[in-house]
Image (cartoon, rainbow over the protein chains, first blue to last red):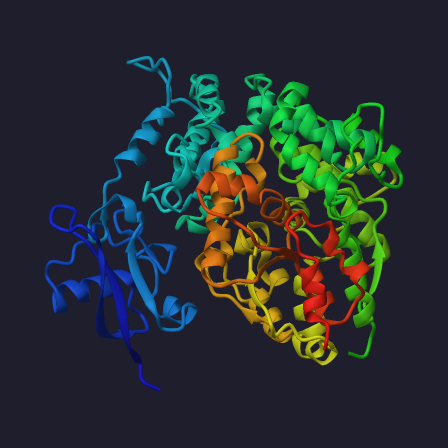
Length: 329
Length: 300
């Protein structure tokens, strides 16, 4: 078996200064078993078309410059073996910038939105530091471990530009900024935690606008799992009493209310409890359709009617909630 | 298969309430294939990621309790909802890799006479059908091939991401290029529709607090399926089903397109091909009219 594979790679080509629409061009090349996606981009530039543009710098997976998408998969070009991706996608690779709508030239994008979101969460330790300290600020291993993985972020934007919530909602802070918010909020040296939690609690831009698709966890080349940090920020809002009562926080807390009563979720009650009776007008059309289809019953939302199935041994569940619940709204 | 397959079924909340057709078609499919199912009647809600947002520890305790009941039976716990699958599996992984957390959870469970051991696997019904029962064996049981239909597989986030957590339990599905549902459709002789949004988010989880985002995400996926000539969409997740089936009118208004597409639960599709009854398949419970599909598959 030959050590190389002859393949045709497609690449997104676009120059915002001269082009109205992007195009895709094909490049045929031999790919060796140890070659990276970055090597393929170099070959396009050095052997096919010198005008092909992309960012590259450290070549060691720490600067985050060469993040692109290959067949829609967020890829740090200097870390990703090319044959592995060729196998994953049946030898057909399409190189695209992390965000096509933010493309400036070929793989190069305008990341200003990413940096603005980052800045918004105060991604630094806020502390009154004695200019002439007599000893270092000590942190236990456990305290340090709380933010160890979130600190590995190289700001490549892979998660940010894989987030479907951000694609729809420009105001959403996105997984990278929220990971940064978490990283500094749990740092024992920091004093701006509550302020950051308030920033990240805002409706429309904060943690409650995450759609829970786990694209960010999948995209991160440093295995940070940003959505796990978003979950921790959710919890911290309740732990530290920063959470205000709104449709999203009541929706989260309302699960305890249902489970305590039935074991199962009361699907009608959770909507009424989250929205309030006045907010229910938004759901009337849908509710009527669901009643017609037999999905729900006309009296499900009435507080004195209980159509919800009950878990067996419900008292166990109630006891466990009583002794395990740690947060309150 | 020499031994009869036997699973503990974690139904989740929707199959017991707004999607009764999911439960009846699941049980009908299991029955046709000779798979034994014991319903975990003791189980509670998995928290659906929202309880986890409020109180992660409590969510672990309740999910661990559910798993305890599967462990008591010595069975693999199967799920019929992607979100139940992910949240149960997340608790299992968290407890199995963190002895200190496991001890804290078990301290609570001891108060009700239970102990989480970590002996039961957790697997979505889709993957038990494919990995344990086998596509070739399903193929042998098909009585009403679905060859008349272009079927758009909609995978649903929580069955395929995060891939590292799912690992072998979803057959190491590639989240960027999933194939399980496609091959199941193939086995039932339907025509799988290839479209970009098959592995994208339906927006269900922010339906209340970020409605516009939710509607656009659902709309993008549905329109992509429709533009690729889908006759129906099929999903292993009842939450994706609820978003896609129930909100087609409002989704259509938001994205400015007519959206009309029956959305089937994965077990309903299998039940159709295995010749289960109209009542078991329960297409009458859909908001977007789907009952015609049953008569269309019947042999002339």
